[in-house]
Amino acid sequence: MTKRAGIRDVAREAGVSPATVSLVLNDRAATRIPASTQDRVRRAAADIGYSPNSVARSLRTRTTRTIGLISDEIATTPYAVRMIEAVQDGARARGHLVFLVSTGAERSLERDAVAALRDQQVDGLIYACMWHRDVVVPQGMPPGSVVLDGRPDREGYPAVVPDDRRGAEAAVQALVDAGHRRIAYVDIDEDPEPLASGLRREGYLAVLTAAGIDPDPALHVRGSADAVGAREAAGRLLELPPGRRPTALFCFNDRMAMGAYSAARRHGLEIPTDLSVVGYDDQQLIAAELDPPLTTVALPHYDMGRWAVEVLLGSREAPPDQGVMLMPCPLITRESVGPPPAEQKEPGRRRT
Image 1 (cartoon, rainbow, N blue to C red):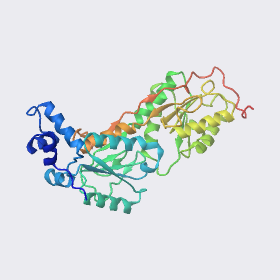
Image 2 (image 1 turned 60 degrees about the vertical axis):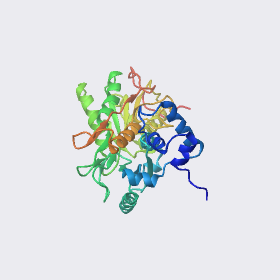
Image 3 (image 1 turned 90 degrees about the horizontal axis):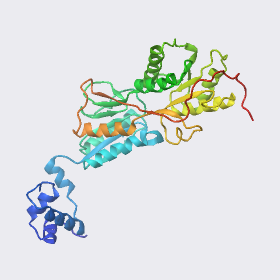
Image 4 (image 1 turned 60 degrees about the horizontal axis):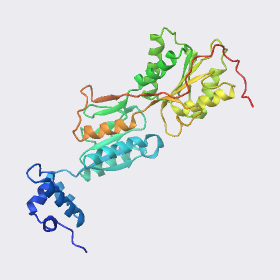
């Protein structure tokens, strides 16, 4: 077995003392050691393949420079890849590695994952959720662990979630500003209802009320959180008589907006000439690829992931209000919003 290069080997290669090598490689040289000498030490370490002994360092610093990321589903869904990337980028910037465990939301697996990562003496834990919802913190997670995209069921766990209400307000306000007054909300049909659904509905209603528009219960419809469910739900809206039919749709997510596009085509309507549509999530390979490209609200997955790492490792303070940070959701303006039509078309089947 090849002998592992040590500090004395680096010192001999660089022509300096072992103490100087230690100061340089542990970032404690400051101005006491000339920059040229520091560069020579680092080059020598790279040339002979020196790497610090992580076990010895952890014994000395009482840290392992690792964190654990436990997810229910985000590791297996394409929609939250940016969240994982952000955690990894934030950890790497602070000299940490990430251990990722996906549990499929099974409570026994979550408990086992927490125990295993704590046995590895990780420096902290992040629990990441697929939906913005109320979260039961997994058994054994120590106080100070960060919850990502969920509201923990007890205090002591800093959390970050998207500001879904304000995001919805931005979406509906864009439709109001374009001149629309018959604006429908194509909502998700889930039991129990996710927090995101209720918050987005609150934002929708708040903007209508502020604009002096009486909300019409018939313009709030529900469907499964995919294109098929939204196509059926939006189709019901487009079958309404012209005087009651919406001129704009606010959809719970981009997949549902894709279904609304399909419903519009089936009824011979063009977007945005005859019908404006706004989505939510800014999902990769959907929003920008629709024809026309979809105006939507972006979920701040990357910003939330970086925030979680920074709070976990102590470079950012958690908010005092029950430890929950509301991350802004920006409106991404594309081409699916226009003014309401002067006259509504009679609904009909798709033109061939």
